[in-house]
Amino acid sequence: MINPLETIEAKKRGRELDGSAIADLVAGFTTGIVPEYQMAAFLMATWFRGMTPRETADLTGAMLRSGEQLDTSRLSGPTADKHSTGGVGDKVSLLLAPLAAACGLKVPMLSGRGLGHTGGTLDKLEAIPGYDIRLGNDAFLDIVERVGCAIIGQGPTIAPADGRIYALRDVTGTVDCVPLITASIMSKKLAAGPRTIVIDLKTGSGAFMRDLEQARLLARALVDVGRSYGRRMAVVFSDMDQPLGVAIGHANETLEAFAALRPGGRSRAPQDLVELTEQLTADMVRVAGLEATPESALAQVRAVWDDGRALAVLLDWVSAQGGRLEPGRDDFGLQSAPSVAEFTAAHEGWLQEVDCREIGLALADLGAARRRVDDALDLSAGLDYLVRVGDRVERGQPLLRVACRDRGRAVAAIERLARAVTVGREPVPARPLILGRLE
Ligand code: URA
Image (spheres, protein in one colour):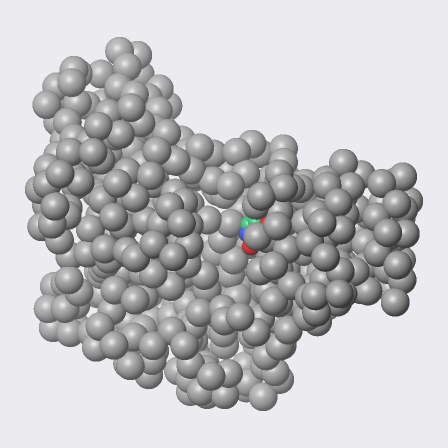
């Protein structure tokens, strides 16, 4: 094993590391031979010196090999997945998985929980009575083969090195580092085995990456690493300067996503949610090779959306994972808290800006988002975001609606919303949702 001190010294002086030095360091750290203080020093040296694309790929590989990798070779169709860098109101996976499956893809998705102001797909799925997020790998892949998609939690056996390194980054000021973020995201995505990976890279006040320049660097690194492991990659840059769709929470987001797949749902659902979901799913279908052009891929996605095939896949998938939905009821049998308060415009004008991170934190005020990893959640509480940046608003018009079982919590959330929303006297343009692409 290469002495970790030599590896730290080399990185500190800006020398390119070879693959075996990186592999030894990660393996040593995962098995407890390399102590946290040495890994912390290495992470900080990397923060200052960066990594070449080859080093980033080697770091990703070392983290990937620290755990299990799913064998998707037994699946009978092309495999594809989508990863979002996270935001507020982002329920796209819940529609996209059945849509992509209805188009002929096999979609094995491993998802995470929300932390801080961003939500996680797993928490939204747990709002479905009976839904099991902890299937074994064989049962998981059986459902993907039979139904076309399945979504489970990314257990501790997937890239365990990432969990430990991420915890250390969190307390050493080394989270915001493109090669470290790249290795973290891609080690987990590669472990699930899909051949096509589409990334939804969000930027803005509710996103992990606040500016587009940093997002572009991250996108390049993600694409390069994915390709070096033989994956087909595409990145869509999308706006997270305001929540996606209307519902923000868990049961209410799940309901918004599922209702969108009902007959006629594509025209009734929030149009930003529809646009982003269509584009990301169409990219998966095209990049995986099922359709040749963006236009034909989009037409295919719309066809399976409108003729009910995606809804049929959704119901099969959820029931295969033990979920008890009641499709005959408007609310699918999901438990949402009653609306108890509204945040209204103090004067007329235009919605100029929202601090999307604060809106995510208002959800934590309602007990529906975690401040710490072990916080319990109220899956029934949530917010409705009723306007969009650029909209004209009248005095007294409701801008956000609060649903929860505890009025005291609603008051705290409304106080935060008052700081998060700016209504000004001057009009501002609506914000574009899709900001660019990289392939
Ligand atoms: N998401 C991850 O999974 N890892 C990071 O480092 C940042 C965002």
